[in-house]
Image (cartoon, rainbow, N blue to C red; front, side, top):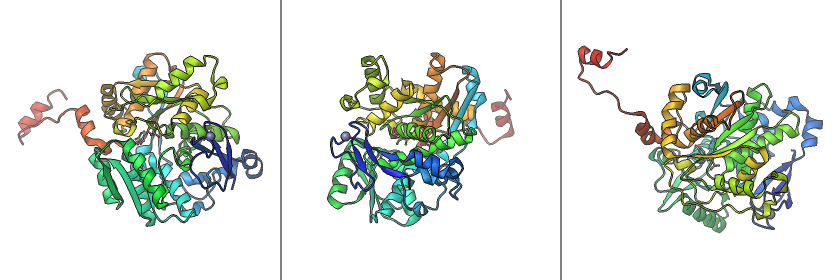
Length: 423
Ligand SMILES: Cc1ncc(COP(=O)(O)O)c(C=O)c1O
Ligand SMILES: [Zn+2]
């Protein structure tokens, strides 16, 4: 194994690989997992980095912090399609637009990548129960994955999570506690219960292993592009754990020599849940000379009162905010918000232009890509990956609002022909 330990994202303090805590003992910051990149590169060699015998994200097992990747769930996780989306990009002049459709994972969201690595870690540690708080997807994913190996799972969700996500949780047999409050309330409660009961805590950001699963999406993007990095990846962002995972994956590949340059990572948010975008703007205003001069110990992410309809990215206190801000600033990416109306409009646009049905949070990536292109912040020749993180069937209510109504007719040929007169 090439996993060497943990490093604090805020104060850079190091912990060894046998450290059993979740966060930095010095400052409480989130931890990033460290690797022996030279060992990976020199002893293992490029070819063997991707030859572990599974046709999914566990093909990259040597780059994961796991002793026993054989404990991975039997489901196919990751290795989702990367579609060239020329027709969608053409009206904006984007010549190399791609959609990475992570809604095609087993529980229909990107979160399966995080849950899969967390699950193996929990099994390695002999955990009896996995618990987590979720806006919906992280929980339904954990419920799905634990069901596939028969491990008990307890999920705390805000009571207003979309019905499809709650249905998934219940169908997969998780113990579901619908908290009368927000995601942030559910998160804090889960922390307390895990501390009290000694359960394995999967909470996003707090648990450093989730980011490691998420980074595999970057490996796939580059492998699917023939081991070339794109110019940018546009990532829908709430807690900031996906975007920090995407950046981590790119940095890993660069460190082991599988790609020869790093892409920009762009943060896509709703105007009504914009904590990370605001923090990026503040850091940039205070450090016009660039990332090198930033002392991350002193960067604070101010909470917001999130009200966006894109429930998966509706977050007051981003739980991996600092890592997210670092991803955008260090990669030289953009941080951009859009109004909820543009997020809703992006659902049918993406579906009609590329054949991909996204839930609102995921459609936010397209709404932001479109805005950045219109504002000249993305250039026409750039190779752009728009990351679709969740399937549209997760929130049919939002899709129906955006997609209009069917034509209601009598069951006659005449009525059908009238309705179809323009075809
Ligand atoms: C579909 C979807 N998109 C985006 C996100 C945002 O990820 P993060 O909270 O790590 O920023 C989530 C998180 O729940 C999600 O479920
Ligand atoms: Zn620290």
